Image (cartoon, rainbow, N blue to C red):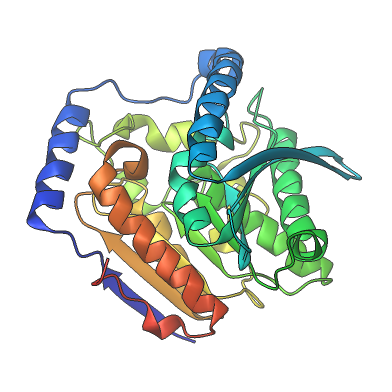
Length: 335
């Protein structure tokens, strides 16, 4: 197979705007995975998600996008989906797995990012997977199960429901980590063909890749010197060897049978090596594209609108190329 690398093309104005955002982030408090955040963050997140959902539903409605909620059932419990449908006929389904460090975030909070896929004619199915409440491994397994079931539903019932043939998956940060683990789960079940997937600034090694281990106090968004320790909190009962097991760190999994994939890596992201190393491993088994985003810290799509638009345009182009089985045609020069 092959690995194709691209650097996102940004205009001088986009680069200048992105650097201004980075300058603000450089003096902002850093995020930490701590006990208070696991206990309190989920309650605050629920309130923010409900408020954001009402606001974005009204805004999307004015654009002709239909917003609805659906709960699907699985043997492991109900899974809540937020569905955005285009005004016209749909041409595919994009399953969206939000980020948020496994403990915050929601489907509704991703509406601004996923609206571009709906504008292009896709149904977006965003997954409100179970968040970690205690930082325990069984909570992580619950999240993986929810994501796998939502992907399975889209591949089977969803295609009939919306009258489409193509299913695509996009996961961001923690959502990319869950998407990779859910892909492995579906592959091992052996019942459906796996859909192409875009992984945006994913986390694929909970023991810490080299860029995580070398992160300094100058790292943007994260508390760099403690980032490796914070990732280990997701599986507190495991030693370093345990953190590298493929059930929680997909970088070490057998990737045989994986579908085509896009990895998005930010140049200012201390988790950048996760995307680089996973893309190299994935490329041994499937067609793989790696997009390098200049100036981009982790989560740049939520902080830097100009860079986000350019990246989303590239991701959309790549996803639609998969519908045509023509991944080499990806280009963002005519945005």
